[in-house]
Image (cartoon, rainbow, N blue to C red; front, top):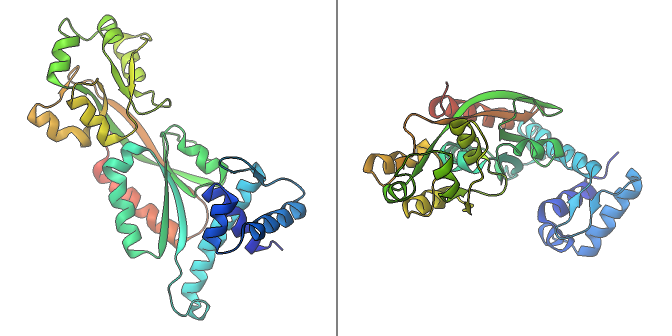
Length: 298
């Protein structure tokens, strides 16, 4: 049998990033955390944590963390059926999910907000590029994810959500300054673009489709969906924005499309672990309902 106190210590180290912060979260000493993980590693016969800044789980460590999350969900289901296991009814279960920043800023935050307001959960939301959120599932760090990957991760189900529609937009002054002769490879090579981070390839994808070839773009990095819009309005650069975030700015003329009727639709999928949990299924239902109402379905 696995020692669940040791598993909790392992999960705390991975979640908090250090033995010291894990000890504070578990209300024990760092030495106790270290001893629990050492004992678990001896039992498993392999390392479970790569010590560093931050500490990270090994492949086996990630599998154990995922197992613990699933066990906690199942324990919560049992508490609902056997109230004496939790007579005060105060226990909340951690529910880790991964989502891309633009979904979180547009349609996903209200979903988790409503769900967590009513369900006995503590949401642990991780933000990453939609092309990389599936890696969080594969690693066992989360139990569900909004991802651009249709193929389900091992032990997961995958459902199509719809598409997040993006428009290439900038301020009128920026367009007049850089695109007076039109939006083409030559003008795009000189006009500063906006990217969320090094993983953000949306601008490159849009340009490749428009110009039928790769164009090296000058880039500003702005790692915030809302700040992305503000930076574009200020004339810092052009970028791909979720339509839902810039409807008002387009209507007022604060932003204009670089090329009308040239949206970029990014298909999104909801992947969830097959944990057999009513809580996870409840979140999935709300996610699917919101996606049906708010995402594009080309």
